[in-house]
Image (cartoon, rainbow, N blue to C red; front, side):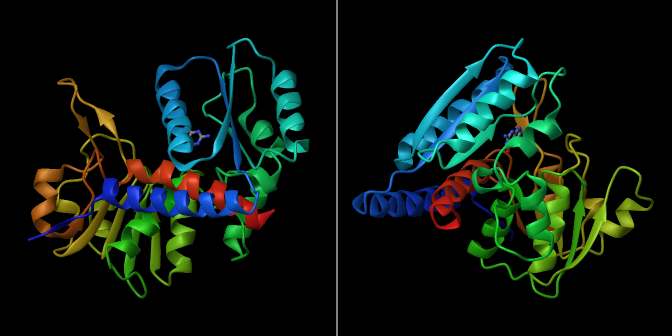
Length: 280
Ligand code: GUN
């Protein structure tokens, strides 16, 4: 029998812990504030941004919402971020990605003060992660570590394969697993013999962005499988990068889609916002 890793439950636990910490800070007269910026009105981004604002409300974090038109110039966005950097009442700044094509994402990320970089995307945050110094960690990979730890899955000494090398998930994920003393392999779209490599994994973390690509042929018996993908099928149902019904019987533990990794991203964003009080 396999364990289903319940991301919804674990994310609620984390949000409730944040809520208690926020209440304790309020008693000391400390308020936490997150500025959320969206440029344009991409429908998927609007859903994410709304969920982030709702989570803030649940936890007791003040959120400032900036919904900017698609035509906003890079200079206008930079001057808003600089204003928020200088505002001592703002703890965290989040620019929802992707930004419109005429705006350079890297420049925007590097404009956010590393002290307020609750997404953990700034080069300074990534660099700190790589050399084991304190700093903000990208929310989805940080959430996956929490899922494993809170499900009593030990990481130390395990063979971990991460499929995907994005700046937001794959790269920070592999560094975090290394920090937990796993032996880490990063695989990607150009990897040869992907099945053989995945079959070595005690812990397989899948972030390839291809619906249901990972079948039981990629799985070692008793592996832990973490599915970062989320896709909408023609029948309107959600699925991940892993073919769940085929893979699950071979696993010791697996995350479902929805209700696995997804809810952890916002929970860890909230944790980063609360942590900002002691990081600044
Ligand atoms: N777009 C997709 N995921 C994310 C995220 O975690 N943070 C931001 N800012 N934008 C995103």
